[in-house]
Image (cartoon, rainbow, N blue to C red; front, top):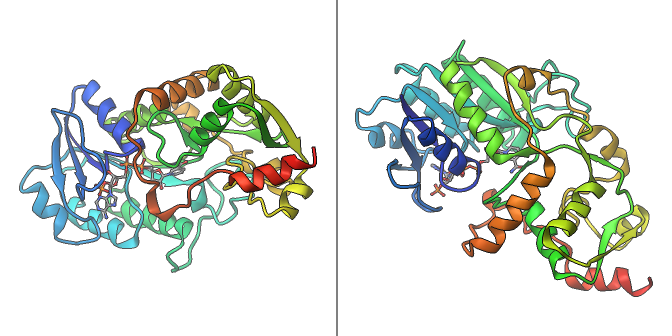
Length: 327
Ligand SMILES: NC(=O)c1ccc[n+]([C@@H]2O[C@H](COP(=O)([O-])OP(=O)(O)OC[C@H]3O[C@@H](n4cnc5c(N)ncnc54)[C@H](OP(=O)(O)O)[C@@H]3O)[C@@H](O)[C@H]2O)c1
């Protein structure tokens, strides 16, 4: 079928494009043409989705039957896609939202998809995703799957949280880690999510689904020790108590990626994924994701910019040295 990826050249969208090709679809991507290129065999359409005329102009009569939307970050982008594609023959629209669409997350928990979503008119990430869900959900009623994604990891990760840990641990020596190594973590492999999004569009699946790994699938410590294993590093993981990290100015999630402070960590990954599992979202072993991400980091020197103005994750060297000095 004719499948349009709104996005398609950076991280998740790149894997969606590949999965759609593998499943035999005729694939087009729609991007500004700034970040990366789609693989051969893909119709590369260009334009800014914040411009209401850009998508109809780029499509130029090519009518998609399926849409996977990985790139929606503004209210205008949602409205423009609804206007351009809503009247056409779209049979399934899979939209990439976020757990941030819930007004209660973080810290959660999110037992199921009936939890409240944001209903404010500001341009913060969560409210924009929630708004986009409503606008696109109305335009594609009955065939609109909204994937409320959790932490997405895997090869080509341009947000660079797991890649930072892999590269830091690979360098070896003494590595500051939070002493909360038993805190739970859930993640979804980008390839599992991408293939599933294509399948959901094909099936015309409808409604929200929390799209992350099952609660309790791993702990932060297991993830970091797996990083040590797959990189073959002799790094010494040096646990530092939360109070000390915070007092030194270490920002959770940013400076020590994937680490959450205690009051959030207990519930943030307590996310009910029964619907996604019923709909067939796979969850491959964490080790495979970590090993494949490391293999990609070693193989591919191209590093795409970190998206949406997000800051570069990782612990500044001077902060790390100061924390290690007293140990
Ligand atoms: N990473 C996570 O852990 C996480 C967690 C939850 C949810 N999410 C969501 O998952 C999705 C991740 O997608 P991704 O970034 O990996 O997707 P992607 O489709 O691989 O990359 C984003 C694409 O959007 C295009 N784009 C950006 N601004 C555009 C514009 N104004 N008009 C047209 N195209 C535009 C970019 O190309 P050009 O620059 O060339 O335009 C790029 O191809 C996002 O929706 C994110 O909010 C991520």
